[in-house]
Length: 483
Image 1 (cartoon, rainbow, N blue to C red):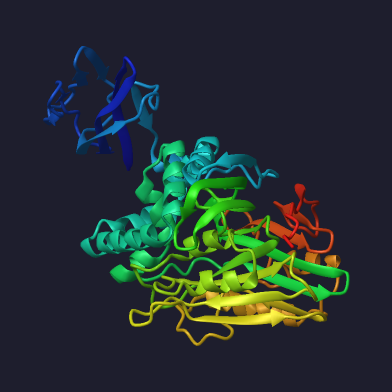
Image 2 (image 1 turned 90 degrees about the horizontal axis):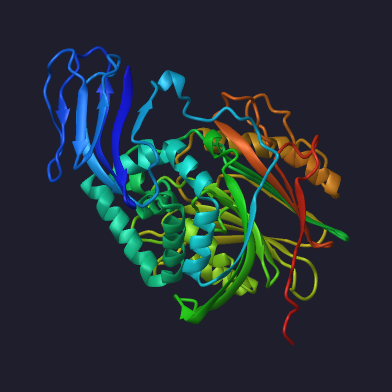
C-alpha cells in the first residue's frame, strides 16, 4: 500500500516543499533532517520520529503509522499556494481517483475581453479549481502523455510541435500560456493535452481505445435547420467543462491569418483552448467537433486543437477550408468538423469536413467535404466515411459503426424533436448515442448542444435531452454582415 507524505515550509510570503516522498507501509521509521541549502537525508532507525527542519521552522511527525520515504524530491511553488505545514494523503483505497459527485446540472460561463494572453489568464484564474482538479484526474495525461513526454523521442516531439505552433499561431500559444498562469498549472501539461495522442503515438505506444467520441447531426429542412451534438469524453471529464464568451483584440495582426479581432462563445474542456467542443463566432460560423483516430500521427505539425481554435476566427466557408488544410504545415492528427454559416447568402448549407494528418512529404492536411443541401441531413461520428486513411480501430470505430446503424434504423429526422430523439438515444446495448451507464462507465456524454439556425439559439444540456430541459438557452449574437 502506498501513501504520499509531504512537509512544507511556509512564511513571509513564500512557500516551498522541503521534502516529499512516496512511502511504503510496513517499514521502520527513519530519521529525516533538512537544513537550509541541503535536502533531507534519511536513515532507517526504527521507532525514530521524523524531524524535518528548514531554517527556523521545524515540523515533527511521530505517528508510527507513517513509513519511511523511498523517493525524495524538491519543488518550488508560488506564493499562497500552500496553507498546511503537513499534509498526509490517505491510501488510494480511501481517495477515489474520480469524485463521486454525480452528474451536475451546471455549466459555468465566463465573459471576458482583452488580448489573447489576458483572455487566457482570465479563463485560467476563473476556472483554476476545475482545471487543477481535471489535471489531477486526467488518466490520459498522467498515464500516457506525461510518461511519453519524459522520453527523448517524446520530448523532441513536444518541442517540434510547439515550435510549429509558435510559428503559425503564436497568439494561441500566448492564450494557452495565460490559461496556465491564471490557473497556476504547468504550461507543458496543458500543451500535452492539446497534442493529445500525438506524443505517445510518435513514441510508439499503443493508442487508448477506451473512448467512443461524439455524435453530430445536421438537419436542413425549410424552417427546421439544426445542428445537434453530443460531447462525449472519458468519465473524469464529467463536470469539468465550462463556457467562454470572449472578445479578443490585438494591437497588431497575429499569426499566419493576421488575426486582429475575435469574438466567440465556445464550450471548453478544462485547461483547453476554446473551439475543440462546439461553439460559434460573431461572423455567424457555427460548428461542432468529432475526433477521428488516425493510425499514424505526426509531431511538428498543427494539433487539431489549434486548428479548431483558429476556426473561431473564420468568417466564411473558404476561410474555414484554408484553416483546415493548413497549407505549409498540415494537421498532426485527425478530426471531423460539422459547420454552417448563418450570414451566408442563399440557401442554408451544412458541411462536414473530414481532416487527416499531414504526411511528412505533403505539408497540408488531407481534406474531404460533404455538403448538406436543403431537404437533406447528415450524421457523423468518429471514423472516416470518405477519406481513405488508416485508423486505429478498436472501440472508437465499433462504437461509430453502432451509432451509425442506430441512426439508419430510425425514421429520417425533420424537426427539433427528431434532433432530441437522436441525441438522447440509448437503444443500443453497448454503444449509445447518449452515453450514461452509471459511476463505473469509462465514457460519458458530458454535454449536449443543439443549435437552432432559424431562431438563432444554442441550447445546452448536461443530461439526456429526452428527459431533461436545457440548463441554458443562449442567443447567437451575430454581427450584421458588412455591405
